[in-house]
Image (cartoon, one colour):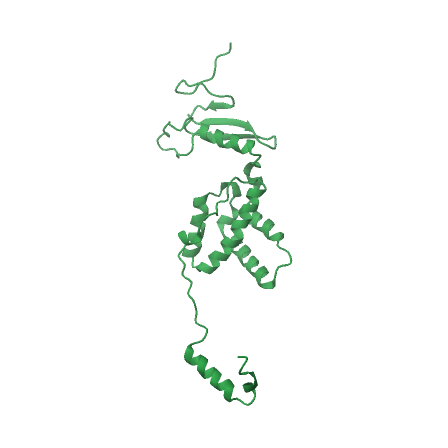
Length: 216
């Protein structure tokens, strides 16, 4: 019988796993498209500690578990290589026959995403915390609450479309906006009571406009 491969702690490695000379662990698998892919981690198990000076993260076995779950759920690998901007464009391309103001709002949102680094992120790499941090950044950059509300109103259903299309497992924008962004919008008074009375008095006494008084 051939000798089983083991890691530096003498633990048996599973099929597809190996440990490199520098101590980093790797796992090779075949994705849903038939292409070979690799996972890496500095620790095989979640209970292991990350070597000093190396970036901490999920263990190799935890990453393997996520990959198996995605494969079983028929999740398309790497979000179909689609960026946030690509996703929003695809979502908006289906919004045909909308009113002029709605279309203008869509273009407003699209132009903002084009300028943001967030728009170039791959959709499967966007986490809940990333989505929250981006919206907070927009407000810190001077965007008003109503603008951020409009942006999220496009991005959230776009990501839900990605979930429905099996590109990602969860929608990272499923949270209450008011819990992370300050509502700085104010209700504006179009006309004061004094101005209203003066306007009606003018209409009532004017030879031409007095005919419209009852309607006004």
